[in-house]
Amino acid sequence: METVVSGIRPTGNLHLGNYFGALRNFLTMQNEHNCYFFIADYHSLTTHPTPGDLHGNVRQILVEYLAAGLDPEKATLYIQSDVPEVAELYLFLNMNAYIGELERCTSFKDKIRQQPENVNAGLLTYPTLMAADILIHRATKVPVGKDQEQHLEMTRTFGNRFNRLYNVDYFPEPQAFNFGNELVKIPGLNGSGKMGKSEGEGNAIYFADEPEAIRKKVMKAVTDSGPTEPNQARPDAIQNIFQLLKVVSAPETYNFFDEMYNTCQIRYGDMKKQLAVDMIAFTEPMRERIKAISADEAYVSKVARLGKEKAQENASKTIREVREIIGFKRF
Ligand code: TRP
Image (cartoon, rainbow, N blue to C red; front, top):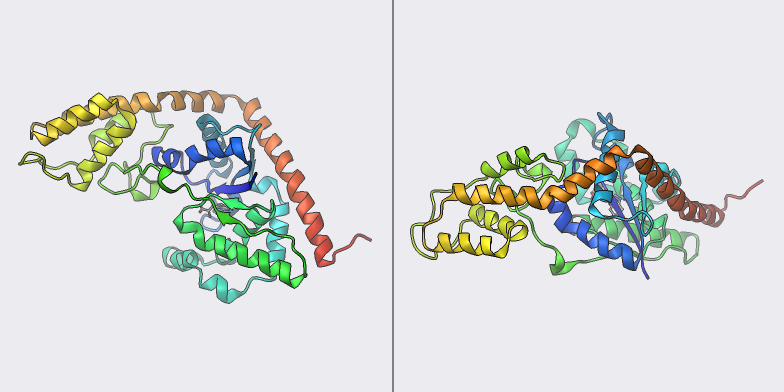
């Protein structure tokens, strides 16, 4: 059994792409491993120092992940800022993290370009905070995408450096948990290859979207003037719509429009109408669960309290041992 840690940044609602990306795999992992899933609200301050509704955003993510099937009895589901032990480990790790290696980090260089007016120390030390998230549970596996591999490599560096400096074998080396081809790629609606919040307005279908909003987004999806020859290759934007049909519609529906395309009889308006109907039906159960869970104040609080308790039990043990190793002793 592995100890798994993964953080979710509280930036926006859950969309179809998130679900078919990491989330579906979290649902399997929680049955097989000792999983810690948390909402990275400390991290969000590195880009949004004065968030509009931090609590509301964090709560919404928690609700949506519960609605998707994360089970607080199986996994430890918690909010990062509920476990200040993470901040203490971050402090210790920062003492042995070098400015040079932090400055060379790709995500830092990207952020400098994106927010030149706010290049703060938290941004520079984002990788040490992420290392603290992982090392606080002495995790062995971290389910991350390609974009996070460098951060994971730095986590190993910081953990190994700690072990070497204090001559201990305390932190294990966390490895990436790769889902490989189990990931279903969900394209966006505006012709872009990937569904995502940062890909522009109307590109993503959120589970919390009302049916009318979904219908509007689908009807606005980018198309072209249609095929002119039988069995013509499909341009990306059209292929995207077919891919979405494949995920949310019945196979017969997909085959019907596939046939219509190949025989140059397709009417994109009809295809999008059908996609909208099927998309609304597909997201319906999740939308209803989100509403029901969100309305249950007592349940949401209970989940957050339980997560805090379980995460802190493990985190405080690590901090106690780390203090001991460094040489902080009780008087
Ligand atoms: N940096 C991750 C992201 O942007 C979020 C994250 C923070 C994380 N701490 C983590 C992921 C620890 C895995 C483990 O998606």
